[in-house]
Length: 340
Ligand code: ISE
Image 1 (cartoon, rainbow, N blue to C red):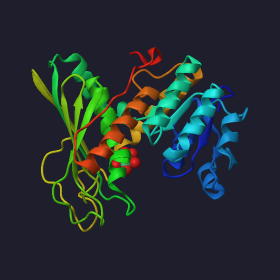
Image 2: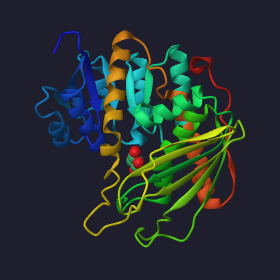
Image 3: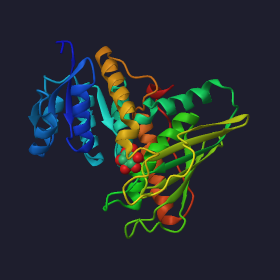
């Protein structure tokens, strides 16, 4: 470890936070874990174990600490706003796990606060942008002259959702990735959302409408369909196919039969998102560390505006679920700070 390593304060030592702690300690170069903050001291200690990081039960103290150059926020979404505002006040670079905030109003306040600082300090953890396959699809759409994108078909399947998972969480926790994927791949905002559902899977917990079909309309006139199925039984499957004027491009589509097995997952697809997106998480954190060290932002990473747009589309998605109606999304003007 060099004394020039970026010293990282990690806030939130749950599943994602603990994963980031290992990642930073074991695989990221040019950085070291300095402090792990979580109100649950045992959790903080477990995540910090063997890393040399100090433990704190006060996330605010982690942000203010002179031992920290940059912060990773992996605490629950409802805690993000005050933490992000504090980091902006200290002009501390942040990698914040999704969501930026649980609702569009708080996300808008974070956009306003960052805009006031005059520079981008927050990177949002939409890791798919660092995945080889998604990056390939983005490059194909940018460079291969397939013509205007007309349709995007997205599939998002999880092996099993935790028992407390709700319809609303299907949007905020899972479909939120597709919101970012659609906006990023098509380089276009989401204008309206509709949600429909077929008959429920027998594997869905009582009260959960699973699977569901979400449709996004974009400002360029494209349509994106998203199948969200959080209890498919056989594994973790994400796919995406773009249909353009002059061709199609597809990722994540293994051929053949994939089926639920009483012995566990089907075998042909990864078990869960940590397996599927592990390398993407590594690259996302590595590039963020390098940008934070140089006082820059990572080109193509999701920013605060992307987080606000995602929160707005998700809010519309939840309304569409409950009303059965097509719900428009209106973002207002994009500050110049986020111009491409
Ligand atoms: C989870 O929170 C994630 O972020 C995963 O990427 C997603 O696939 C899963 O559906 C969510 O529950």
